[in-house]
Picture 1 (cartoon, rainbow, N blue to C red):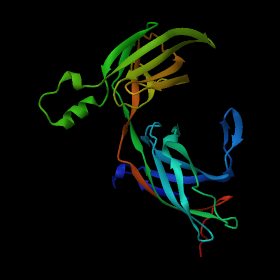
Picture 2: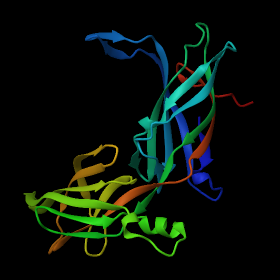
Picture 3: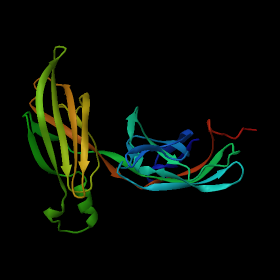
Picture 4: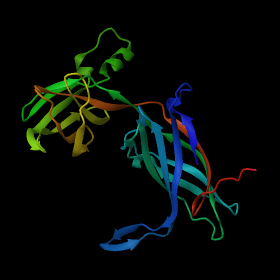
Length: 283
């Protein structure tokens, strides 16, 4: 199935969000109860793939919204709605296409003699747009840090329409560098580091880009990282390494971050058998 809707709710947007049901099957969940392994009752589960063209992407993985589609089986029996947890969206990007998979579960099993289940409704997909920050610079020291205004702060100030802006109202973030050092690999000088950002306001970091003096993006290997958050603080760290340009004097980098745009409504009307989607035959 290939449903589509225009990104950001704007008719002129040329990057449609597409949704495809990629899997369907009966499964049991394993769980621990009172220290003993047990299995849940049999459930009908679905896998749904969302895709969109860059620079659009999908909202934060910490979105915990649950959405439902109406369900009917081939006998005509109306089932309890199927549930989809949009908080399980973990975006991945390749070739200019951003994808995310969401899992769903039927509210109840279809009739024993049913041959398919029809799902119908609308997904409200949390969509974001990737934006580049200004370029920042750190000395090539083992450790460094700097507090900077978060990108987008000026836009928020201008949107307020006031003539006076208090400096305390501008959100800031702590950029930090750790374990910055060089090593040799295949006769080439390499540099490795941990680059991070900590914030106490709403912000959604996607990645860091390392730049040379001409503002060209260097090919950079990501060697892992992580994030942590609580009610008032969120932090990202990335382990990066790259071939160091000749005569490199400082570390130049920028953030690629996500800003939310209007959620996209994607209509769904699909029949699913145990082998996947059942398409209507063309006459």
